Image 1 (cartoon, helix red, strand yellow):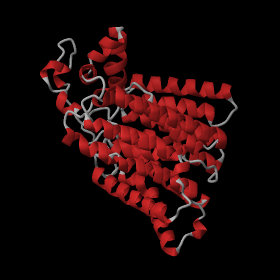
Image 2 (cartoon, rainbow, N blue to C red):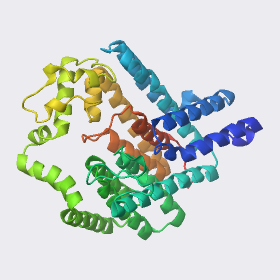
Image 3 (cartoon, rainbow, N blue to C red):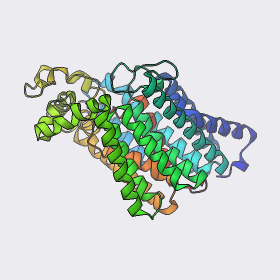
Image 4 (cartoon, rainbow, N blue to C red):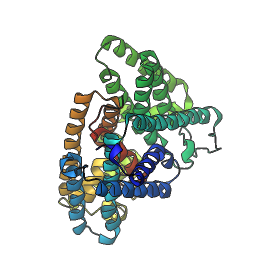
Length: 415
């Protein structure tokens, strides 16, 4: 599609779409209402341009079919939900995230290099402001706006009482580093920023996101250029060594990563016993038992929060079983198994595997680091067995699907 062929009105709509995508990461710091408003506006702008400009052919977009099949599976699952009304908004409302992903892909594939670079530059600036704020909070005990974390060893930054900034940091870190690499072509600077952001991810205090962060950083370091493997190995070893020393001497980090996690793993000498001795054990055990009782279709989206409280899901052998009832199981695969059963999990697996194949092909063909960054985030989010937020909540889903749109886009013009 050629933007030159747009009418003046269409160019205005495209420019508004560009602006909203550029500032989208700010909405993630302002709450679900703002996020949803921006998503709806972006979706409507995309749909308007799509229906006006017939050159954008959805039948040629494999991402469209992947998302359509996945959404239809959610609608089918809705029929078998144990509480249709409770599941309805989540199943039907998923379409806004699918359109958001297509809108991001559409914008990347059809915008000019200048506009695309401005988007990633804006995202990176916001990311580095958040990085500075996290360092400030770590040193001062409160962030630039005076927010303080209610939990020792955790940072909240601009999100205040919501301790989930680690997910945000995970999602935009490699995208920002890719931009720095493209702008400066300086490996020393890239390695310094990789080390700095890894340290910041550690002090945020979110264990699962930090482990995913290490996974993403490891693969990005080896894949962004095919050379200096020996040096990279030494660098990764030194980073791990430094972080280990920091954890041992910093009381907050030692409590979070050793006392509450590492020492328990060594003491229990059994993964199952270790999990059952943590709060996640209560959630995970209940989710697994719910799945066993509802193997084919689960209990329906958003229904774990209702069913998990039933007395039959109490397990005296699980330390935190009494606190098992919560909004979601805090583990992605168990969320799908308990709420959508084998049926829904198969379509989720189809979406994940087919998307990874397409994204990998896009990266191999273009060697585009933005594509690689978002693909690694997608893999870390979907393949991990670590604790995670709900797949369908506004905050987490918005972060997930904008990254999806980035790595599914076929382009290399914005180097």
